[in-house]
View 1 (cartoon, rainbow over the protein chains, first blue to last red):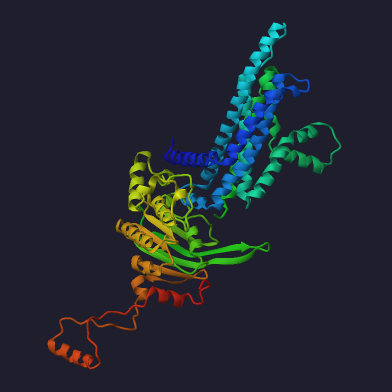
View 2 (view 1 turned 120 degrees about the vertical axis):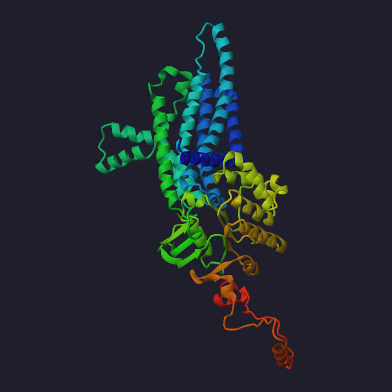
Length: 282
Length: 285
């Protein structure tokens, strides 16, 4: 590897470390991880509200919901907060006066935030995995006693889903950093970023509308087509039930395709963010 | 190593757009100067005169509207230029959760110090800034003076050729200011080029070889401290080894007026006076 590339990776890794250290010290992170853990744990005692679905599915849905919701909030708020903390506290002045390029700064921020999101999502996933496994053991014994088929649970599938969620949160974090590199305030970034996340979750609707024959005018069709390229389809990462409880129902290549498109969006968002950040006056 | 001045600024202009109508505010107006290597250069001026903007442009933190800047022969804002430069920002703020030693080590790594050289470099920087003992305390517990000193340590840990200090004595007591003055002299003795922005004119006069004074975005004076402070239109006579006759004659004449000849040199006005004269109607008076 050339020396300049090695030096650049070293700087990015140190930016990542600093961002990670700063993030895990924040009360907001501790609060959200405790709240989400409490939600996952409470799913066991609330399983009587299963609305007729299988018990494991209810616990799964509860846990995935917590990961999805709080993970999204954490990704939006923490990405924006860590970026603007550097600007508002003027620590960016010290860092960018060093031989750190703005792209390295932004990539280091992204990786630091993504690492924190990884800690969040894998901690919750491990907790959910333990709960599901323990309950599955009990249900298996009960099912065998009455001669029924034991429930299906794939811990590997659970962690595949966790990986998918981590990739989704990576896309969200990169999108927020792109907005932050253009925006002037934390609040603007959080509001616009949240709107983009909601748009990303609903993007599949635009895709479905385009596939169906409809009487949309050319302008609407054009708008929908452009939006399907610009806004990532975040819904494609939410296949937790299928991966964990019914592995066979996941379409071939769905995971790979989601991860590939997620990686592409991360690279594109960071590239655009980096271009905009070059022009920013510190 | 490239030759030429440490910093060369030519025709530097910076306009800021303000308000919705994009009104133009000229912060730096056609400024040109050169800083020779190995000298201490004082950049002076009242608040809002464009000093910090000029420094930020030199460091690549703000882009100029017009003009050229080179650092140590490299185009400004490049990694090559910044890896040879150390910077202490005005009222420095660092990540409070780090210890002083961690911060300096972290900055050493960002500045390209090799992993095996980090610890010796950190200890040397902490020793030079008298922060060795406080190095293991978190930055959140530091006083203003300690913050300035740890800021100086992070600026010099990678042994840069050029050190830029923006108000290093702001909020620091006289003893701390004197200590920072000593550190600047120590860095100069090691051959560093130092750019110093300060309102402590007495200290600037003591430590700087050259100064530039800015007012309302323009450079109103630039030159060697001795040259700009010396009044060439007046003389002080220092007389030694005079013949007894001549001396007696001179002393007799002077004695009649109650005076005695001891030296011949040029009288100086103080930097404070010069500063006030040039920066008329200072907005922060």
